[in-house]
Image (cartoon, rainbow, N blue to C red; front, top):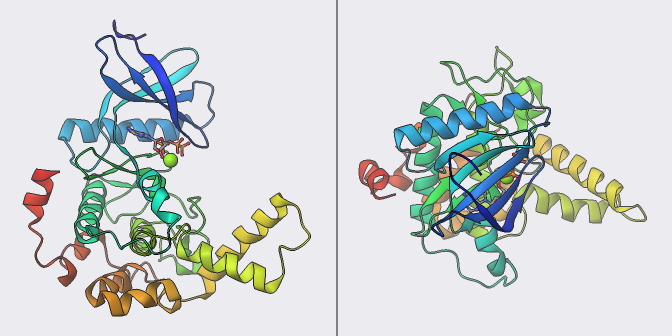
Amino acid sequence: MHENKTFSIVRKIGEGAQAAVYLATDESGYASALKLMPSSYGDLESIQTEQDILRAAAERGEPFIARLVMSFRDDLFICFVMRMYAGSLEDLMYPQLRDRNSPVPRNIHAMAAELVCGLARLHKMGYAHLDIKLDNILLSSTGHIVYTDFGMAAPVNAQGCTSAATANGTPGYGAPEGYLSDLLGRDGRITQKADVWSLGILLVQVLNQTEYPMYTSLALRKVEEWGIVRDVDDDTARARTAEAVRFLVATTDPLEIPEIQQIATRDPALHDLLSKMLVRSPQERWTAEQLQGHHFFQDVNWCELERCA
Ligand SMILES: Nc1ncnc2c1ncn2[C@@H]1O[C@H](COP(=O)(O)OP(=O)(O)OP(=O)(O)O)[C@@H](O)[C@H]1O
Ligand SMILES: [Mg+2]
């Protein structure tokens, strides 16, 4: 209960490293998503950053960021009450992942435009997300994209730099500079460009409808081929696969991976866009704002796109 509002939990809809998310209804039957984190959770700074972003986005009426309705804290939990969305891109893609012949989503162009626009707006607010992946992007009931889960997010300075020298996002989506410090610039810090890399990986995954991001799929093929996960327990296999993902991100040009080469013949403009996102050097990688000027988006009216979301 809070501020005379009582919520009834209906069911759990998600669970991550630090939080559980529930579908709940209030007295009038109105459905919300409740993200609950234990008050005893050690990393209060990350929860504070998440709350700062969600509050600022709600005040500004940000079109592509999950809407915070209220937040409160008691002895047991910190709770974010959020608008309820249709599901994550992961949930919505899953049935299709089982059918390898399923068609490419017809709305990839609109989806990419909203993802890039939403990211540019988040970056303008002064943050880096640092954990972009399918399950952290929701779809509204009208099919618009919504960024959520700012549990890894960090504020940036005027140059777009966080205060972190390493990144702990999800393997397979993480940018190479997250663990290859020689790719970092003079200041040696992770920047907002790390999000552009992760978004490029995600777009390839959505387009090809693959179960894993492309470096993870490649690593799974390689660890099998190299025989390094035979006759070991599951935890060891997982750790070795994660190590293989990092090795491949460090050594393999993304544009040489079959998943992305296929796109070159199907959609050259999208392939060219991806070639600006999946650049190993963060200095040469385009910003989200620069991507909005790419010819793949030449027909997009950005004001209209923001207004309709
Ligand atoms: N507002 C919402 N509407 C519908 N589903 C949601 C909503 N918020 C979260 N979810 C679902 O719950 C899942 C987990 O939410 P979220 O990513 O915010 O938390 P988390 O991954 O547990 O957080 P953390 O990584 O900080 O531990 C999402 O992937 C999504 O499936
Ligand atoms: Mg999450």
